[in-house]
Image (cartoon, rainbow, N blue to C red; front, side, top):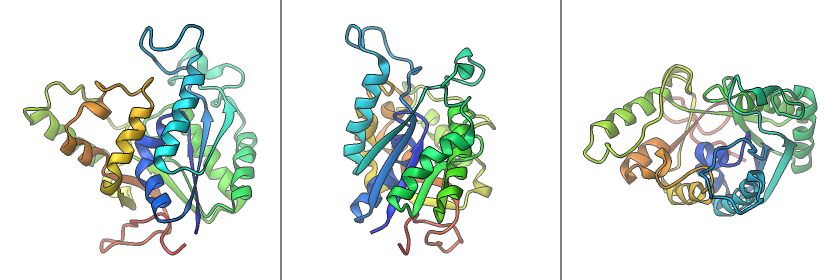
Amino acid sequence: MATLVSFHAHPDDECIGCGGVLRKAHDEGHRVVLVVATRGEHGEVPDGFLDDGEPLWRRRVAETHAAAEILGVDRVEFLGYTDSGMMGADTNDVPGSFWTTPVDEAARRLAAILTDEHADVLTCYDDNGGYGHPDHIQVHRVGMRAAGLAGTPRVFQNTMNRDHLARGMRAVADSPEGAPVELPDLDENVGKPESVIDTAVDVTGYLGYKRAAMRAHASQISEQSFFLAMPDEAFAHAFGTEWFLGDGGSPGSDGTATDLLAGL
């Protein structure tokens, strides 16, 4: 049994980018640990969704635990920083925000968990945080530093395959079922080009868990969202492979790694 630690910025990030590899690791008998930097205080929520006086962070923490159970996570930890909001927002610079936290300070907190768990593998994000969100960029910086402090042997940077997403979005837009689906903007700030991605994990066998975990984050992912409104075939194209930049794993015939925990 090996230990996989997956580090994320906000509640719901874990199921979108890594839900398949988390459940796959669990089903293969490994220990799975989820670490979240913030409680997602600045997420958007529809009017009337929360109970009177209920803070959004409390609901999002509960949603994270519910999603983690679906994904087979053995331990959930929050580092305790505040959501920084989107890049350029006033909330970026509020004291206590994850974006303003010194990298070494946060890295020591994460490294303590990695050391306590004797982590074999850490996932974080690519250097642009997938799409330029300040907290996601900070996850990359903190994750890479923490792995160095703790001596974690394998680090995989979760990313999006920009070319694969573009092909899928064109297919959805051209399909009869595509019209009701609100597609996100896709530009050069999103993910990485296919040519630089060296790790692709097939998680099509875990899409039911992944979609159920998304539904557990109901405050952020509605049934009308891009994530849940698309037809099953389109969902499988968008989320059936999870992409990483990293090392280790089990190389396929084209040299691309296909398993974060191979050989452990």
